[in-house]
Length: 106
Length: 119
Image (cartoon, rainbow over the protein chains, first blue to last red):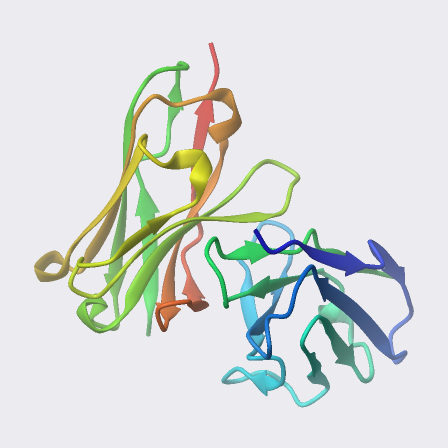
């Protein structure tokens, strides 16, 4: 099973600041890495698929990068609605697995 | 507008059974892989099961193999999860999700249905 380790567990930032979230895979998933955002009481929302492709309707301030085992999600300038939990997911091997999440808080 | 609406969650005793349903609208499920993903209270996401468009390929996480069965009715535009021999650790919010590809990412999610396994 591919283990995804997200860091940091919590990121405390202010609106307007840059956020960089990390996801490390226990073995290479090439570029098959996905990012989701989840707000309290809501379902996850797809942000980025296959490492760097923004999903439909996702603002340009969200960008993904990386390959192999090391990936990152960058939010260039935090807006109030971006404070949430972010999960990564690999889609190269069964079972599909998610990281433990990074909470971005004010 | 794409919508996924789950139902069937309930409080059930350990060893019991439940059947979850997911009604899709705004798209035809026959053209997509469909999945169940769960989230224990206060915890992260866990993929549970996937089913191919025609039902010919099915995958499960090891912890539910032999106990859960995913199925679909394309004519009814619906997805199901039959859950038997439920355990306390199956307690979670169960999401129905639309998937892309055999190893999917999930572009649409329902709001979830809560399954609580407790005596």
